[in-house]
Length: 401
Image 1 (cartoon, rainbow, N blue to C red):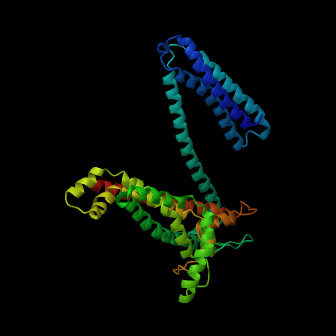
Image 2: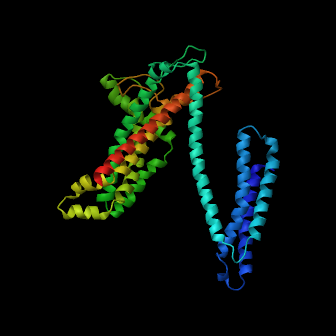
Image 3: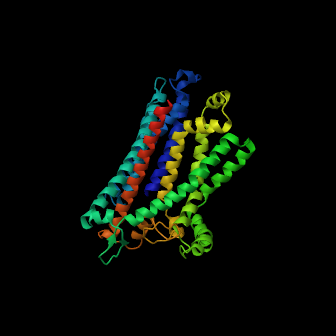
């Protein structure tokens, strides 16, 4: 029996348990359902959860053991049978517990609480697993490649035949350069759009403008990349780079930054708009009552009150910019170099992670293991952004409160 069949069969047994438990609760209560401690719905839910949770537990343990190499594909039918047996046993125990004094509601709340705690634990364990996998593979990389050359090297020329130069500085420079241009485009436009929609626009205009802006968030990044490659890149080359003598390439940092900034506008505008609307109206009324103009109220009252949320929106946009790949591949090129000229082609860390892991890779070579060191570097940068954001928010809150 495939595990997927056992998974769906467990849900079917849980549904049958809910119906059976609810019917049994009505039968136990007689003509007056108020004789029960809990409503029949809770009795049915209790039986359904007691049938579902043990089965899911068996399947989860089996999946972990399979990833660890303890179980093989041949053990799948056995695991499926065990999962169904656990579901049937749980269903039977749940039905036998139904009675007038059975506290089904309390039992359901405890099971749901445990399930919520398990989901939180899964998120924590997943994050820990990601970090540890990056750390261990990065440790393997630094065993075969000098860390000083990696962190302070200014040349990126990987050669799988040996004698590679794997300096991260050109990639880090390209990542920060493209992200900075994108944020310079997205943050002012997104924030001003949010202020307009929340403070000045009529209800009809807001109902049209906000969905129109949020459409940008639903466009696939490959489409943005093609837009950068076909439209924005040639436009910048023909009207800026070549006339000014700054380059002849259609791919450049400015191309990727502009297109990425357009993509990030909804992240800033939509979140900032929601945060600004959450500011109590009493603050606006108080400022206007003291003689402030609407613009002064926005600058000195609304935006300071919404600053923590705005910082979060900007941080989300920055993290999105740092992790973007497709727009950079098609818009900025793949040249690992350090230059102040925004009309030259450069590349980012994410692009090189993909290129180093593409094809038949030997996970014992430094040219492949370097991808994990690059990934860990991105993780540290994002973590630093979060720390800076927390410092800004806490400092502001101390002054405001």
